[in-house]
Length: 294
Ligand SMILES: Nc1nc2c(ncn2[C@@H]2O[C@H](COP(=O)(O)OP(=O)(O)OP(=O)(O)O)[C@@H](O)[C@H]2O)c(=O)[nH]1
Ligand SMILES: [Mg+2]
Ligand SMILES: [Zn+2]
Image (cartoon, rainbow, N blue to C red; front, side, top):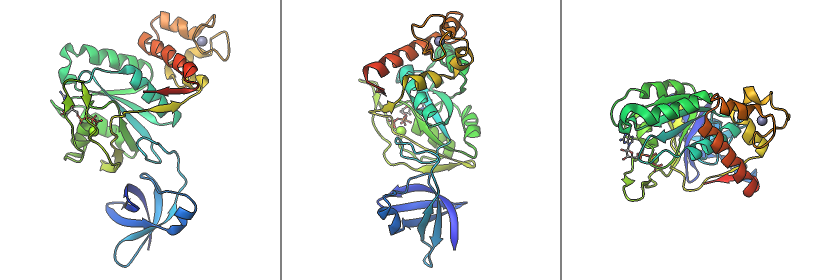
């Protein structure tokens, strides 16, 4: 019997393959090792089911994309999480994460968590306005206080493979647990001293949610993205409708004269914080010869 499924977990050469509601424990054919192909979580595969109910991965379909962190293939979407406090929002990091997602052509949802810590919703409204203006879907939630918003997040996940990403301690694992309605991921305490989270999330696994799948990621200790200056400019969605009006066709919206993007910033049509972080990132790309890091 040959079945089609998705690898949802892989540990030491053993793979769990989901076929509709069933999960098969599988090994991979030897030919993949010879071809230097390592099956990845997210791979769409054909498996042959053996008499004992286990399976063998026979064929791996071509990948739409391949993320390094978390190592998942065929990802449709990134849920980029930021907290209003504990840890303080790091919007430069959020913008770098969004650039990484844009480069992989992922859909992007900005999820603002811990709104229970936001008196008067001031932080939350400011962040949400900046990213909505930029062209992203924004949801805000409090895992601690209520399930409101969790339903909004779920709606976005339907029918897609998603990854959740963001600084350590923003509540990624907590969100996954709330979505799945059970404690699937370990939730860590934030170290009060440093305001840094412990790295509690280790293995990568796709969890089923309402017709979609989502993978948790540990808050990154290190991150690196290779990007050209032109890509960086093009990945700012909010620039695109103005960029056509810039004097120079290859305008990077930095110091060039007659720049329509800079004018839009002055007129308040583009969020100033987003633009200033863009300039910072362009300088970093110059200094680091085509890389952004944290
Ligand atoms: N006040 C408040 N605390 C929250 C909320 N959501 C999560 N937390 C707490 O924030 C801490 C970190 O949550 P985690 O879910 O472990 O964060 P994480 O993003 O998975 O962190 P890493 O795995 O280290 O990347 C835990 O103590 C949670 O209980 C929230 O909505 N409000
Ligand atoms: Mg976690
Ligand atoms: Zn310009």
